[in-house]
Length: 268
Image 1: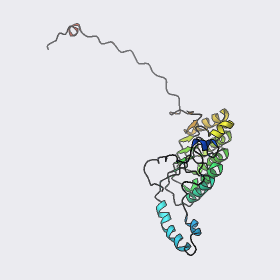
Image 2: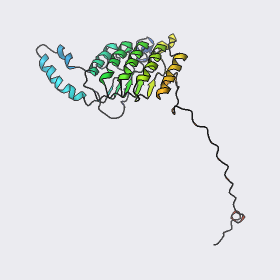
Image 3: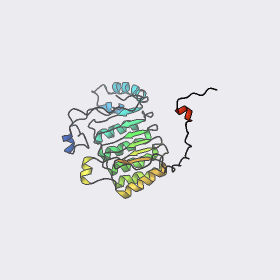
Image 4: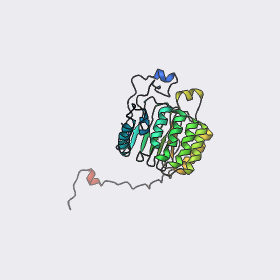
């Protein structure tokens, strides 16, 4: 169940049936996608049309009466390591676009396989989340198309502070789209994570090149946004060179009188 308020959500442990071998098979960037999702996206009142015959109106009315009230208080949703694909991400995006979670501040889909289509669906839901501050899509097989869709939606996310896209397959086109979108973004944006690529992309040599990296770095420095690339922070915390150290003047050496060195006391 989605949790309300509090500190950032803790990432649940890895499912027992997933293994590194399944990831090497190419099903998922890291942990491998399950045959069936471990948890379904939020159910909307319109989805109750599939209820048993004769119970649709009553079930939908009862669910609709509590749906908006319960989700209005939700501030954080975590769907990490659930074996989700683009279909589950699209269902989650539809729930986010309903407008019932306008107080949502954090969404995490860490370690799934939503791909470009899932990232684009979630990007389309960003205008419906006016309070969103953090979006975590690390290790989801997101490429340039997904990153470009997110970049196009960033100006509409006025309160977004952190965008996590590390461990995906973002290359030059995605980095260039992010760099082009930064001048139109809100000043609330402070951090973009593109740290590392997924194993499949690493084998193909996919990654952000020096030219795209330099352009993204320049755009981030202009807006005072911290960006992470190539396992290093390519921007400075202070966003400017530190001032040169000023040498201190030599202090006079304090000498101890001879009668103190001999252990003698002086009476006043």
